[in-house]
Image 1 (cartoon, rainbow, N blue to C red):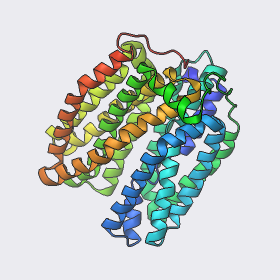
Image 2 (image 1 turned 90 degrees about the vertical axis):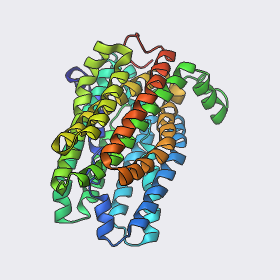
Image 3 (image 1 turned 120 degrees about the vertical axis):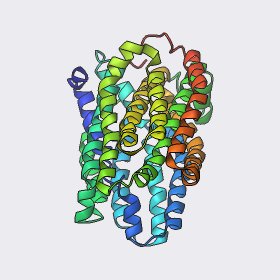
Length: 398
């Protein structure tokens, strides 16, 4: 990590991500809307509208980033983040709530694949001595650090003024604008990569490369398992009778695990090579089983372990997908991971909620661990098809 941060482009990009990945809003957004007087049904409807928007916009956002350039797209993302969170702070009516949550969905989708695509190309062009996994690990650690700080302080900001977590998030994004503007430009994709119409060229580049398709599938499996499980965190808090501050510390532990995963990613790549994402996935499955089979503080302690496995696997697939995809479709390929996983997550999260409500949160964790075991052969097969098992860890984006 230290070696990667010696290079200006990695250091500046990590700072941009640190400012754009703040999560002051994460523990309080539901409470904020409830305190404004919105009912559970309205909040759930807004969340559903948000998730539909994300799924519909992810791949188009990646395609747009591939067409107009990484830095320009990143500037748009920073500006849109400012607008989104200022708008959330100003929500008063149901109509405005729905509009703002659609805008938030577009902003969320715009993050999909963009940062990883830029970083892969920036390392290749401007910091070639740095390995891709070192750069991705350093940026993941920076995002984990900002997650720790923002999650730990969100409750205090909310106590001062309920709008403050969202205003501070917008302020951080505003500070990110000049940082992003100072990032170097990326050389455009070769003409051969851009041959054909927008749709024709993209889909041919994605689906003719079977190894890339396998990596996208594997990344989606990791996303489905890891992100769906986070739905059970709130029921776990309620089941264990945790205070709001204790719950905040649990979320902070999950974010801290992301920082630790960034620090450990280069070591995992050297130690396990292409199987590093598989190791992270196995940690997730084990943590889910542990959270379901135990109770009290012990069950809660499995949450950071789950986060460690999740982010290790995510870093591994981000490096692999960005390294395999051609420049002209790199952001689209990374967005395809989120899109594919998002479709399944839309059904998986409510299903886990129903299981938790009917049979208990512990049972839901155990059921999901069993699902993880069932999906394990799929992950092994796609990693074999991609040539990752037994292969050396990718050194830099190709």
